[in-house]
Length: 449
Image 1 (cartoon, rainbow, N blue to C red):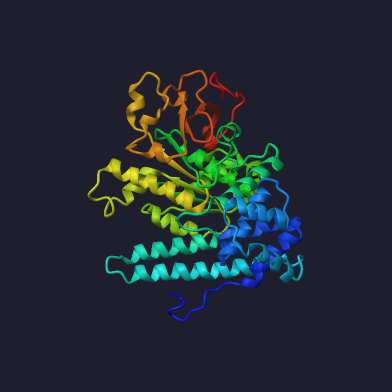
Image 2: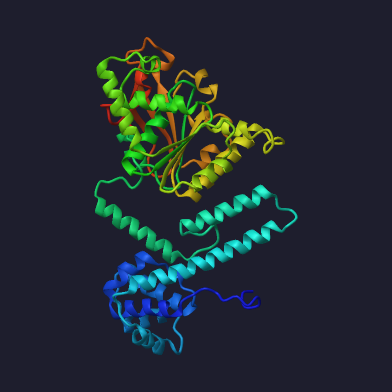
């Protein structure tokens, strides 16, 4: 198509060859090169095949030089009659290996231009189709551009080789980090141990009956995640105002009674703690949206515009669905609507590459049982919510049902589902005056947690 229209496809043959020549001349530069470029970014097929061959050898610890690369190309079935001569030419035309990362920048820039052109063509084609709606085309355009900004593709089949490279890099970083969590810390030690932190693309559901403290633990996680990761936490509250959310965060951070804080009844020492808490919160990046009619599409659109996004919190699932029920879900059952919205949440988490922590109501089913601890089947209008979620945490406090119990502020975070590990019960402590959850001294139950 580009040739027919007289357009020149952006690519840099010389830079592609110089990268390969540098890798053959000096294998010591291979780790740096593979950290800066992917095989898919090479435009010329033979160059892409040679790069993938060298990367495969590097990944498996094989020696890299012109002869070993020839042999590997034979094994991979990409050897051609002129391959030997072409490998020699690659080394001959490479001026120096010192500028190899600059060559990588040139090739990546040309690849980005090709991807932008491809995305623009697809958006234009959709815009001129009679069946397309404006908001759908806008959503497509935002997703495409966001994906390019993240240097990824939207859907489609990709070679396993670059994915393998990413996984090996993650394993190496985990090994170098020792006991460091692979995901973002929630600030609650035992939950972190169970989930291995909040992983990129994870959809984590926190469910309980009203008044159990879902919003509180979600805000705790947002603040701790922003502190530990240095990234932005986006909080979408469809129930509480921004002022109410900030008030709760101040109470939790300063350990000042929320009631007193709300009335301004503070002594000199508490005013000092409040100032310290405000200073600490102002140093982290938390974005708040209290629009009660926010939809998943609107949430995703806002998040795509946030640079350095690390976490998304949604309070809560059923309210977001009911806000969209006027049009989108008019002809569907509520259960199907909530199931669809949970699926969209998971898709959005995967697209954004960040964890989404979403709160959910439990049905009254647990209150009819003698043991009122939550179960997966208690998820309100559950449908396929439990299928979409990577982890489901049910909150339980005996003091919620029996204020005269021995320890009314003892709390349990019951890991009902966990794709990354085992399930079990984590003990927490509820501090009602500060509306916050903290770690408990007890660490594990009979099941291993």
